[in-house]
Image (cartoon, rainbow, N blue to C red; front, top):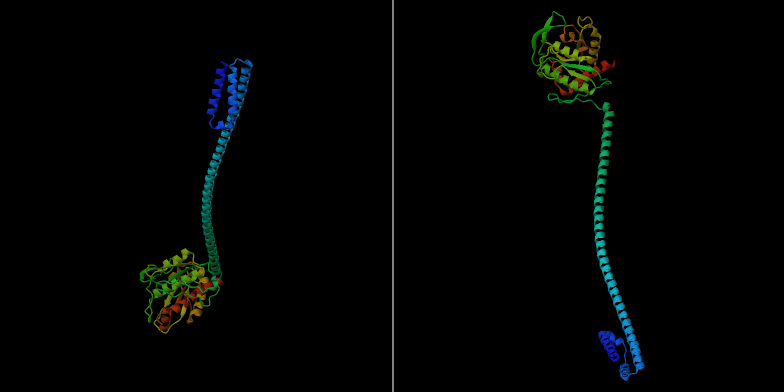
Length: 396
């Protein structure tokens, strides 16, 4: 039995060695060891117990040594495999890490590039915004400079207004501007009513010569006309009246016109009441004279007498106004001075409860006066003379 057992052990050892494959080369068993082992087995068959025991002990010892050797080799192989697997795993991790780093680097590059692009776009937009802002600032500066310059011009114009010769806006029938000649200091701030005498159609109905008077007179006549020029008195009166309005307005007066057209129906009483209702401080009535004697020429003014039964209280003021206007008119035009005619026959004066005067600018029956009064330059002088007289009246 022992022999069979030993043979079985040998077979197991041989099979084990055969199963080790490449590791069998690492186990060194000499042929002499096999021979010795089998010799011991043969000796065992002679019945020697000690030898069998020794063989068993030796075989057991050898088997133990071989097993330990195999176990050591297997352990070494397992350790090598584990180290190899760890190495491969480390390499794989390294590779993955490298790939990840590469991808991350690419992403970083893309993000950086996008950021640079955005930054460039933002810089460009900021540059445009800054340029636009600069342009707007420039426009603001230009606008501010222009406003300052305009304000300076306006201020200078305001400060120098009194130094500029006064001019009047022209109308369709009067293109010449009124220029003051030797104008005294302007006072302005007063209410002046201008009444261009007559109208295109006479009013033959009668009205009282004064309030409560039984003396009746035609409401308004058609006036006279130029013997040389053919100019109608109502047209001449309107031309001068409109230019005087512009001149006085330029001088700061508040001006009210009884009429600004020839196509009206205003009686002499109506005209006086317009002045009364306006609270006129001066009522200027514009007319031209006529005579059977064509040689008669020159200018005159008209007011009530000190004993006027209707408005004697205004005599002194009306006389003063009449004197001032006549003197300034003659000085401006160079025409002949006649006089101030005091009469209580003028309906338009008798109904006026304000200082009043009539200016008879010249004789339309006189060739020289008629031609002069139709002349635009001379008209400017007439207007300036009347306006200067009004200034003198309020100044004194």
